[in-house]
Length: 226
Image (cartoon, rainbow, N blue to C red; front, side, top):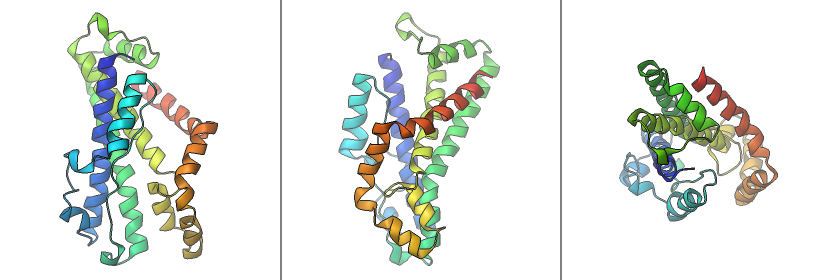
């Protein structure tokens, strides 16, 4: 992967996790919890959301090594005592992060459609990106740089949304699930929170998450090349 491509992907990831956390804070504020608002977390400025490891160190290591990007921001604090219906409200607060990423992915996809309309030949560049044959060192048209931005905007935001919807604490999917299942089942799900990160690492190690992401990647590729 070219250094320019890595830099673009990193800043798209930074944008994606920023709108994700900001959406959590905004939704919590609308449901009566001002905690995130008071801490300045309802903002598209990435600085208040930065986690030294998940936002800077890990993505930069991945950018240097060329392995797929992954990262996270500081979780937005939510005080359930300020919510009228904690179970129902937390469901929407949890869902708002992935929904914001899916909205962003759709916006970038519209950008790709417009780009293909402006320059139908750009589809050949997308094909080279998807097959890993892009060589930006030989120079590229400004539209190709925009194409990379839109491509990673779709890819990273979609992956981040899907990943966070996995119902394992502390991922957002667990908050959504707890608002749907019975209180007894929700209590059992909450008990695995201390082991959630290890479970996620285990799923990554055995390749289970790849079974989820690969079909999504091929779907995105099909839409972009159509």
